[in-house]
Image 1: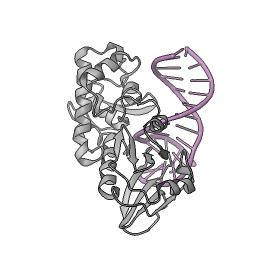
Image 2: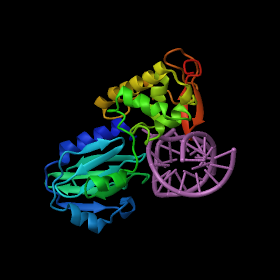
Image 3: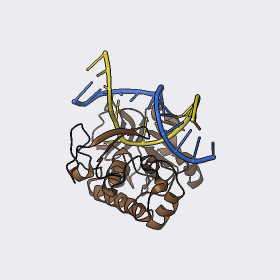
Image 4: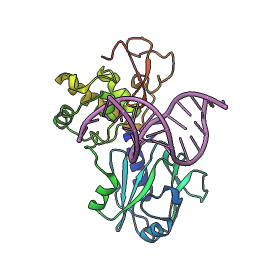
Amino acid sequence: MPELPDVEGFRRYFRRHAVGKPVRGVWADPDELRNTDPMRLRRQLAGRRFVRPRRHGKWLICPTTGPWLVLHFGMTGELHWLDQHIRHRHARLILQFPDGEMHFRDMRKLGGVWLAQGEDDLRQVLGPLGPDALRVSAEEFDRLLRARRGSAKATLMDQTFVAGLGNLTVDATLWRARIHPRRNVRTLAARERRALHREMKRVLEESLPHGLVPSRPDLLTASRRAGSHCPRCGTVLERATVAGRTSWFCPRCQR
DNA sequence: GCTCATGTTCCCCT
DNA sequence: CAGGGGAACATGAG
């Protein structure tokens, strides 16, 4: 599930439920902790209060008055606020507050939990990331894109190019911009590069109110199966592996 | 039993 | 060095 709009939804959810309250208890699955362990995490967070969380790409950063909790959701991560202590089988981290608990679940354990001690430490944890896809300007996007080679799909998926897009949002962006996923970005005209930026923003912004990537037909998110048709021209959609991921596209609209 | 899965990283080629 | 392909991670769903 988690691409940029989903993580932005989690950010708001975390802010609404967890900010400003003292941490009363911490439980963690050691497998999910990437640069700490359950004992240390508990000592670091106990008694602290979270302040306003922020997001960069698919990363959720939750600073406290002391250390910062950093979450990545992988492919199956999600947050749940519960008033009762019921540990779901996929629970990987539980933060207990006076009035409830924030549960981080991650079925496939492809996500993770980190601890950072400030901005410098955070940069180490996040690694090299491009600008957030929701905040990057058209000018900056164009400048970064012109410096790239390779397929449009691989470029948009690359978090060091722009941070936050995933398989679904990239396919939706390419379909709207009428660009074939295998198109070499060096061959893109200026107006195609502008279209990519514009449609990327539209896909993300339209998904934000849902807090997740929506299933609107014109976003292709509901059309990812054999025999489905292009919502624009009716042509049967094609499926192909591009940049290692399953891509759905319209062979007629996307060039 | 089989295939595929919204992410990232690492290894091997070209 | 930049890109592409494939595997791996762990656990399902169809």
